[in-house]
Length: 273
Figure: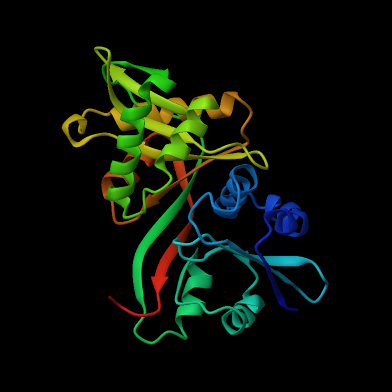
């Protein structure tokens, strides 16, 4: 009943990949991050090597995972409650991104800890496209849109408080795979949304962004509904997305088009800043 760690994503996925796939919604972040490490190399997110961990229960089966890709904080997938204490003893955690119960259990040993953000995971139920639809239409992003898309990814990262060091890679990969969609009106792009690669039957809507000057017209709802529809038609069994629970506008938009809450994740630091 121990945690094991490696910097080799193939070793990690050979060990834990099948278990992660049994709960693709709750493990969506671990699945997509490790898929990126496998396809783009160990430095896809930064110069430092990743740390990939798994915990085996008394039956010898995997029952918990951890992924850290510096400069990002450690990210936990589903973790059995009995694995939380051993993790705190085995790995020097000072911040974490985890489901609410796991994060709160870890934070109980961090006097003065700070909850920096609460993210809500949503799953698409019955899609309800916005009506009336806003002016314009969707189209797939192309290489000709690269400069705009990189700028918008960086602006999105700034809005949500994330590093933007891999904006170019994300744009290039998702444009090449057809996983970035623009909403445009009068030939002018006004909003975008992407989807992650399908893994274990699930995709996640990402990087929904509308520049400030185009907000308030329903473009984000329309482009999100479009990529959600396309993902379902392409065979995704689960269509997921995360929101900042402190943003009532985005949470309301996604609920109106058919997304339903699954669970919450907390981003917690051991010390307040």
